[in-house]
Length: 153
Image (cartoon, rainbow, N blue to C red; front, side, top):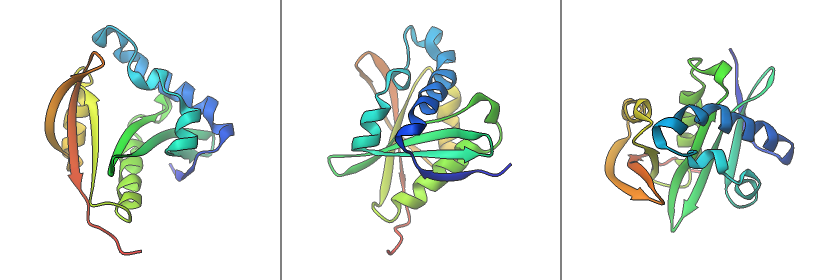
């Protein structure tokens, strides 16, 4: 299966919102409420952050949001459509983000919810290191970081 990554455009927003709901709805029971990505304002991300989509022949297959906050880069949100789970798309998106960020930063940070247990090991297998755990806005978050090899532009 072949995917390509590009900047999102306004026409992608409905597909991105649908993917977020499909990808995160399985966590509602464990968390007791909707995960933040299900309520994300993707139009604001498109305007203020870096919103990318992964495309397959059938259209938008996944997305990711990168944000710069107080000089630090965050992998804010990443999700794939259910029909692409297990196809390596998540790994592709993270690798693409790291390559893109390596021209801008020395590291990337992220967090995931403790209830998303499979994500904890997945990020560690991708080379991320846990840096802490905090409850923010009622969400029990586990924080990670990864140092990048800075690319010359």
